[in-house]
Length: 281
Length: 313
Image 1 (tube, rainbow over the protein chains, first blue to last red):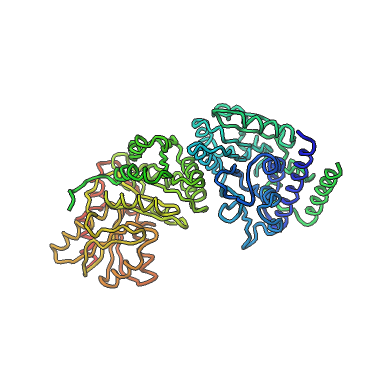
Image 2: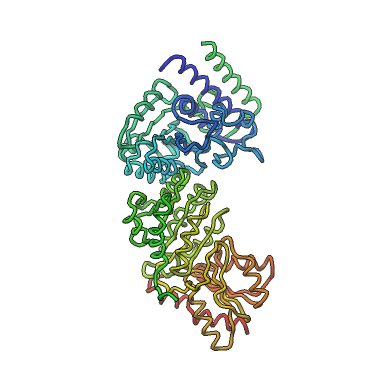
């Protein structure tokens, strides 16, 4: 990947992490762990990959993004604010009464949200519907959807995957944020969704496994996905839950908990340091 | 008067979709491996490029319909009522109604008149489930003509709609010159001053028959067809309560949460009125021929007349 671009994406990812922590801290609730693990993917999607225009969020020809793991919207909201869909000041009002930013994505109230999600397993089906509509209408937009590895325990994910494979939805690109943790502990201990690659392959997907924090690998995977014909793609991104905030990394307890004042200070100090380092590069 | 048509409302649905398919290229019909039974197969034959068989996966079907609607399609997600509203209830709630998407949920084979398939397939809860959802319009047409009008209204209405249909053929009667279908407006099919019977779906023609039986006993019953259970025609119901003093409701549904409760809610708030609910009394159905089951569960003209007569005494 181009060095300047990589630096830009790393900076965006760090800002997304800061926005997510800011949101969850001010809301005194929400889901930081999965927002942080997916921050690099959000950065890549919104600042390299998808064709969207914040000035015209309902453009019928735009690419679509469905956050099937809707609870990690603090990360998505931060990305949308950074992209210019709405003011970054909205992030501090996340989950407040009367706020635009709901606890889970609300397509009616938030520009840039293509589907209301939050009940796991449902976003992927809507993404399939969007991809199918694109095929029916001969449009060239692509549909992206991000799932969690815990979410793969929902049966609907596999109904939708069978559908995507059967209908050869090669305009659909799924990502799975494989951070290995869910509320009750390690995914391997709770219900064991692995082997995830073999499952998607069996459902007719082109499967790639990457380091979800390595922009070279992320770029390669998304570029490859665009060349796949006749079948849907899935990018399995191995990530670290809570990535970027030392005490949150790889701790299941940070799935759905807000930092207290001291923890917030620590998190922001660390992220600001990271940002300063990136900007100095 | 046109010739008498006896058709199941599911068949009228299939025929009407085919009719509307040309004028409304946005219509997409989805089914879950039941196209023969739900009659969406007719649309599949005529417009194969706009028919999506989702396989036996109703939850995904509703989600796919939601996604299609965000891209300007008018999807009709169709299965037996048990599955399109029961199996996929949460998808209808969160993927369709919460974002108020333009998705039409269709449940054929509603009620015990499914017949031989028995309790697992005889959905008696769908009206209750669908009317609790904010922004959902709930329609239960009573015959061929009304189904045709309801499907058209569903296409023209922007927002989620639940269409409740039946397996059993029913005699058509909504073909009077002044018949007019309007969402949310009930229809007084027979004027009467002694009591009002409010019915929906297949029970409307039985209520009309019951009125004839009551007439022989000197009872003048008003018959109201409530094809739109939500939003319900409050004005017409209150007017009937005011003018006839007592109300009987009839539905092929659990007496909990259906038409009877919707009418009771209106009356208790606006004009408390004595009311009797005829329906399935909080129990499951069982296998048997449809007409025999309807008789057994009291969803027949003689029983409606009997309850009404006793209620008046």
